[in-house]
Image (tube, rainbow, N blue to C red; front, side):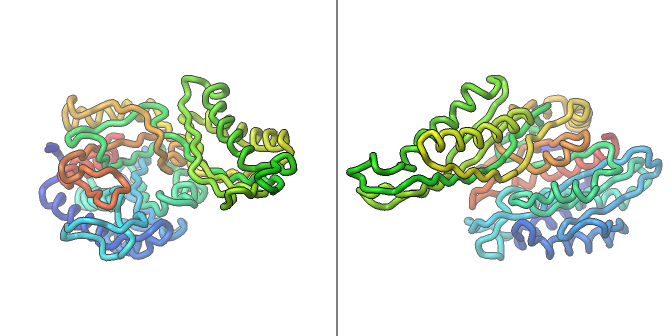
Length: 385
């Protein structure tokens, strides 16, 4: 499907074997210690030293280039999902209730494949390379946020990452320029009213009625406060109240998520949800307790890195392979890296019969014919990025 310039069949087969090993032995966010140990073992075989300064189970390794005038970071995530895998593939998960349902097994194997190639061709690598094998992309606390805090990007000039995508056709590679993915923050709200008899509502402060106003009012943030050109979403995913026909409860709990496609939008929505909770509840004589749960910022693909990435994709695979994608309201903690440094997050298409199920589905699988492009792309970013 993809024609490669640097990657041969032997490296492709080796990388696919690694991907299947990771798929059979998945680990949840923050628990990827066996995966990390395996990655370290392979890097040691390649003669690439691991930097001990960073928290486990993250693995950060450094490859010194022949010139070293520029330092490029390449990132892969390692964690799996709490899903029971379905299907009959020979490399199905051996851990009940845990599976690689988002392609992180492929990302980790691909970056290892790129590291293996560099160790065999050191004279062709002029730039310094930082390999980031990251823990905990799927859950909080974010592995990316932790690594940035620990200084993983301090000496980095530009960072690149890839994601195998079942929503992008096999044979296509692309990204959205600028704001590409949304922020993802959550909230918990408790409305404290005054319980009472359903037949005497005037003697109570009905938190369910107040919650209905709050749910409606939050949508006014999108329609009347957020810039119409800046996409945003507020969704309620949970509501717990009473359990009787004729008893007004004294408390309601609400849970929801906030998504924004700009930094300004995320800040506005976080502020307004808190303000509305307090004011609406107070207006009805209740108390509103708002708890904001910080997630990930919007993912911003820097224009200069996007131009470089587009040029590399077209020169390596052909102009027709590149596709410009629309922004999406999904989130990725790769955004923490791009908030600090110039970089680009690239989607490698793999939509096919084998990869027909969406990410986070129990039958999700990677079409491994896309893996050669992933390795090649990582190498080209390392050499030319």
